[in-house]
Amino acid sequence: MMADVLIKDSGKKGKGVFASRDFKQGELILTIDTSATIHKDNLQYLPLEEQNHTMYIGKKKYTVMKSPERYVNHSCKPNAYLKDYALFSKRAIRKGEEITCDYSLSSVDPWEMECNCKSKLCRHLIRGNLLQTDAAFLKINRKYIPKWLLAEVE
Ligand SMILES: [Zn+2]
View 1 (cartoon, rainbow, N blue to C red):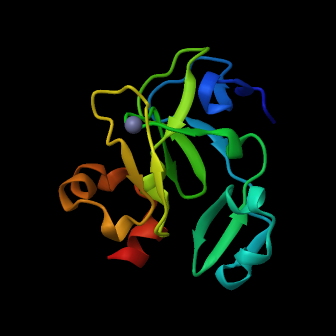
View 2 (cartoon, rainbow, N blue to C red):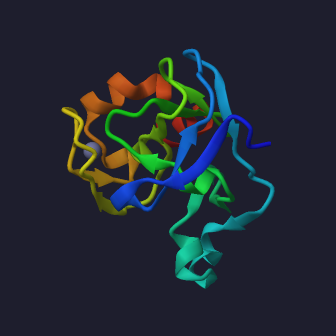
């Protein structure tokens, strides 16, 4: 199942997910296991560690992310994006590169996170709520937002 990616240390960010082969643009990198779901109202009863690794899957439901997807780090210049419930390559990715995605494009909750991804496009303060995201940013990134999520926020 994990032949295409591997989990290893990513320095300050803790663990990360890395390509264990080359990917062409638009290739499936990994599918996200959404079999275990939890309603928004019950998130508060999860241990904090689990709460920090949930992903919104629509209709007020979340999934607690499993491995390897829970170790995918954020970047303001990511090489992967979420489509349906899977990660696809946004551009060609070389074996050994870290797989990253933009957390803002798949969240509806009002969290904030500092970022130091060192990309020229770094937004420094990352916001979780798609609705509060700058309109120009949303427009540019629209095609990298899962359709089911766009349907809920627009
Ligand atoms: Zn950044």
